[in-house]
Length: 304
Image (tube, one colour):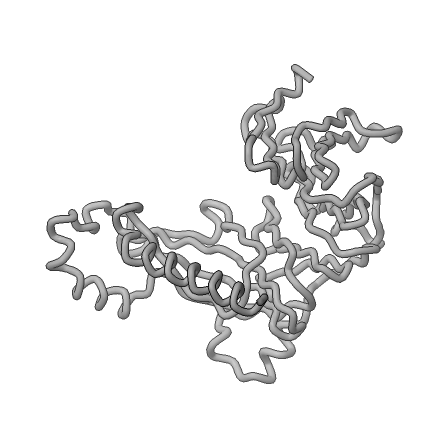
């Protein structure tokens, strides 16, 4: 009985996707799609004025994607270039849409809006990928196998399509740093104030802080939670504060200067707390979300 149920579910998904694809122009002003050959588990935009530039009435931006595959050799970091039109008059009104559809198709074939500019082979699933805020050439990943990798993409060729297969194999397996943690995880965050300070959290509830600029490859501080860590995030303004969410419905605020325990630990949701992020401008506000499908909570630190 399991096979027919699986088949019916897949058929429904395909039918719903087909309907969405036909109707999407009624929902969005602008939508680009791009197929990737494997499941994507993490994504991040490169910072403004870092990788992006303006050329020929287009805003050229880049994103990095991390893949998740059962086959070890099929995991990659993908670097995609996205050409976003700047001039809104380039988009036709609904009345003129039919008459210009062939021209649009031809333009997309000649000048693709999204393309892979590079990819790096990655050991294990890319559970999360993060770009260092002070230097967008430095990229970190955390895997499902207890590994933290640091890449310097300035040392990786930007002409991936033009080099031979042997060179690709050498090039793509060479992170500049590698750290071992006791278990895989999903928590990964760069410090916004202290360059090179990297916060991690794993399935066992262990929190580790590394300084990639230090001579020794070791944890400079660690802490332990009583449940699997779902997400970690440094405060945007204060270099010693960070937040942690966990599977036990709690979110926790730590201060690296306080060694006895967390500043705050709150059971604030009815399900696993999946994400926490601090406000980019206010040092007292952060937001959390959960698998309870009900709340996105906005919390004021000075009101706790």
